Image (tube, rainbow, N blue to C red; front, side, top):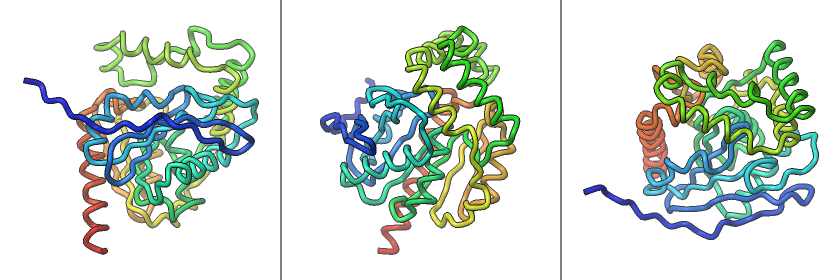
Length: 280
């Protein structure tokens, strides 16, 4: 008999953030708050398969970042401060207080900037498939991608998701890879380009020394988009970080190694919450 876990889903709220932009998010479960930030080209539904596990222990909030999903797509340019301001407004609207903040890829970039700018609102940080800085070559590649998508839309090459997973996963699950590419194709090209430019250049590495929260870093050893070296640099910069390398996982680590992802996240959060209770 298959077990079914029931969790509380609240109404899907919409909050008005900076510039009158309306931000959609999903709010479900009970417990300490866990906020999930998707990556470039994603939306709140990239977390669907994990919510039943997470919401057994946590109140799980997952927004559609501006420009994606059901949130508004205002004209660009976008900036990282737009995303962090949106997140701060959402936390206030949901009356969350201090949260566990998890971000993948672009979501991880936003999470780093948020903990630096709003440290009192973050209990812990989980960074997945992301980095603390972008070099000149990578910056140029991001800007070329943004220009291409903005002017020509999503061509076949622009939505080829093969490099976003490990070679093993791509060979074993070609239909999942095609679905990833198709999800990107559903995005608004102008909003996608604006978001890509917003994360094309940043360098938080030195600033990360200020982060006093516990941090878990997930890194796939076969990540072709953010190679493992960046995670090592990030882990060394953060005073209270632990780095978890996951074999046979690429940039989309959660869907490639879901068990490792769920167990790692829940174990880390349980430890953080237990320590907080002992200190109280």
